[in-house]
Image (cartoon, rainbow over all chains, first blue to last red):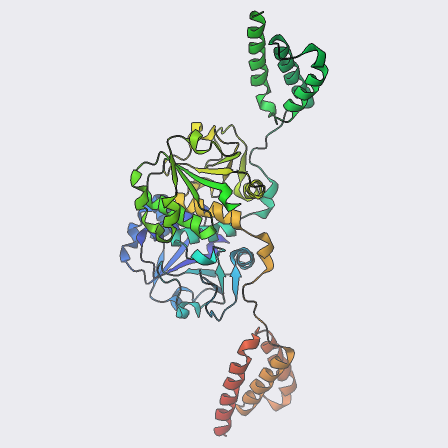
Length: 240
Length: 240
């Protein structure tokens, strides 16, 4: 499926950007880069892409956009502009990502076009596109760095909304019993330290218990906390 | 709300990356950059950030992470690793973005930390964090370019799931009547051109009608299409 996506850079000028695009492709598991009429054939220099060299080595170079997208059943252009007359449907990246994922999910060859750093895609480049997408940057400063634009589009394709409630390492929180042991040791230390006024001690106990419950103690930290309190208790008792 | 987010770059080494981070901030409408012990004080050179100069000019420099996050009630670190013992909850960017948006939505000062290009955040840097986030890059090549990582995180914060069905410029499609006029002219041209066999012409008509309905004609294109067919009709009649 990832092999069905061609990242097509049209007349890129800066080898660093080609390298950055390749790195983002490697980060997100896409492999097929195409270059249309790259400004400098020295694109293989692309330095920031050490671990993405395999992408640059297999990148294909075409003289025209038409040839670069000839085998693709969906051709999508990227643009920073939202105002000029584009003659094409223009989607924000969020819904565009959904449409691209659907097409790729059906194993259909798809091209995603990025224009040159300075001018973006020309009207002629866009005439090869079925539709356009726009990263939701500010209207006042919409134009993005090429490598960053590629990275954001590929992130959107890899984005997993289902992961929205999932952690890599969920933190198990302390139990009520743990909180109670923590509270008891703290109260004992406070008592020895003269913090607790015997007359108001019942309300102090409630206040301290609530204070501790608000802490949010990870279960794994309990042993260290209990050790800390025992040590402090030992010390405050010594002072008596 | 956007003003509540501090983008903190810890010991960044490459002015181009600082510039790229500033540009992404400007693209997505964030303004407060902080730099901890930047490798080269020449960070103001940051060239790729012409239209983001205002961010670099107001960037604050701190000697330590502790000072850079002193006024923040939530401090979140970014990491490419998912395996080493991080001692902190680690979220994927998707749910992390949700948590960050909630915090920022409550006007709470928040810091998002990015480590140096080469080493990422150190264990000491991370000890100032409440939790960590990870961009869902491939395990085999997780380490991202600094500017790209900043851009992706800020895109996630600006991402609008509600936009998922929204287009900038919805394409109004042709009506049934439009399709019928298109079909009638095409059939007439085919008839003059000798394509339609009179014996099977009824089934041909159905086939052609279905063919045309599958096209997906934008309403705005109808005039041009009707003109094209009339011209073709004129020509095929001439040949008779």
